[in-house]
Image (cartoon, rainbow, N blue to C red; front, side):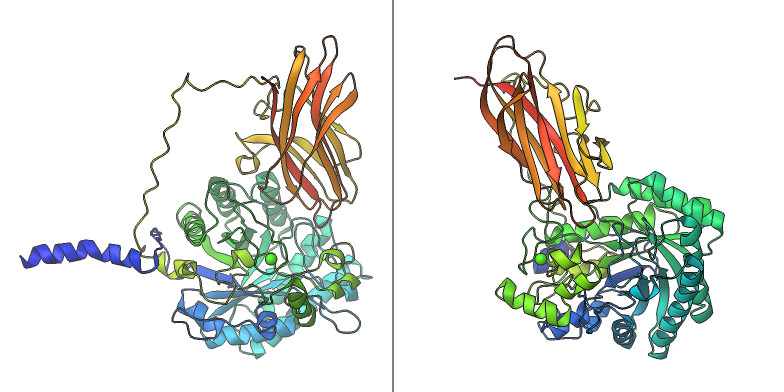
Length: 578
Ligand code: CA
């Protein structure tokens, strides 16, 4: 009898665990004891100065470094900008992350046994795949002199961090150095700067790992080329790190392949240095987010964050050779809490708690100086807008043993049996670009850098391919994507086609129909953000006998930030029936 009760109780335990907080964490097997679970909280001091308060799971106000340590985080990552201030000393924002800020963060991290990953951008503000601007103080230096300055600067910063008691475990020489580094774009110079940085790390922090950081693993060829180039130049680093944002950077299969090849070929340790996933598609601070709206496959939810982090960790542990860690990016960059944009803006300007302040115009007038504002990732934080931890913060400590119960997916809805559904006639050849764009032509009216049919399921509305455009320079995107409807009979037809994209700046985009070369109908299309598809639909136009019809899309973008980009998919040209 006793045994039966015990068995029943044991059966109940996982149910109770799941009921307590409703989350499910699938176990990651073979998780090494020393696996790096990192969190970048570079903006946290600016957040606190703006009045943000963080709470633990018991609802008590608590030092966020302790909250993170208590929940399985092992490393804190912090970015370092050379001098993110204008001539009057006003901060550029993004946390005003100079070395002083890093020293404060490193010191507090050490207090709770957290190690530090130092992320040198070697710029006065954001360095990423779109820009690698040289610090103002170094702008007149040649590459050799710059390498010397970089070496000295790195040594000084690391000395200060160690002096303050920071436990420096890893140092990144450059941030997302896919485009270049420190205003240099030729690898003859880039590798020299990297070597100078690594040399400083070896001298001051001989125990720390020296990391280089790239993105986007999806451009696997480029990725392998960086590793090969670094090897040929003899840059002696330890860790090849990448950003991996699932909504931009392709599949985990691809990530695993790319990192494993680098680990095997060059004997490097590899890791995901930045990742994140939204718990909501909504904005919470009156400043637009880099990912918003609805999710394509995995939900934007707390459980979605858990699943994303768990699957990335599983990939790095079990499917990648020499995988050492995963770092979540800016998981505490929540709203500063005001009830209006104006209220928040005052705090962003004063404390640097937004992604950029208006003062950043002094350094980056074309981007930050125009589009400055709040957090673009508040919907991807692991804390809610009130500073309370989301259940997803538990994922780091729960992955080792697994936690809760899996929710069975709902039974799929009954679908119409084949043959019953009306087949929609479509006069477009290759409407979803799955045949590589057969029948379509791109006409470039400026000089966009990229205009082609791309294979990438995550960026396709249906299927795995779509038409892609991108260009970094302002006003370089203007094109049409058109198809002659040669077989179109006389009659009344509807035409529609969809677009998504971003960083368009001022833009014009519309679907159109031409009869004998004259535009007879247009329908505007919105370019907003990733995965927010907008359909340009022309409900009816008449195609007279003996005329030539053509349908297509016109797009013109001023561009902003890292450049206008977009995807076009799923054209439909179908008869309109009464
Ligand atoms: Ca926001």
